[in-house]
Length: 109
Image 1 (cartoon, rainbow, N blue to C red):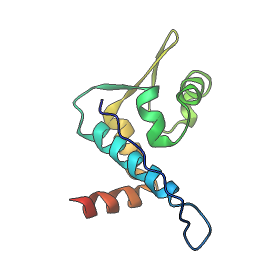
Image 2 (cartoon, one colour):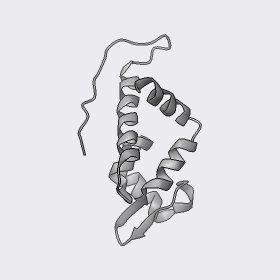
Image 3 (tube, rainbow, N blue to C red):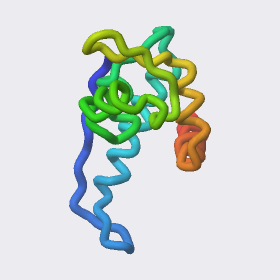
Image 4 (cartoon, rainbow, N blue to C red):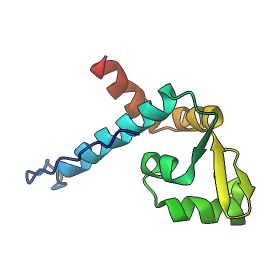
């Protein structure tokens, strides 16, 4: 997987929120696009965590304790957690905030 360097900025928008937030969203979008264009059948918690903006350990814990709360199917065997790629992509695209991901994707094309 390609590492994407995140840029940090010191300027702030009208609400006082640093522009670094939008730079993080861009890497989130790039990671989602990598997953979307991948031909892997299953993803790891570490691969989907940046897209969901959570820690990989949180994904693993939720998958073991309450997989029904994730919103996408998971396969848990032993300490390993695998996520089917296509249902995960469909889940992210169905989120209300995914309109931002789709809009940014169209702008970059």
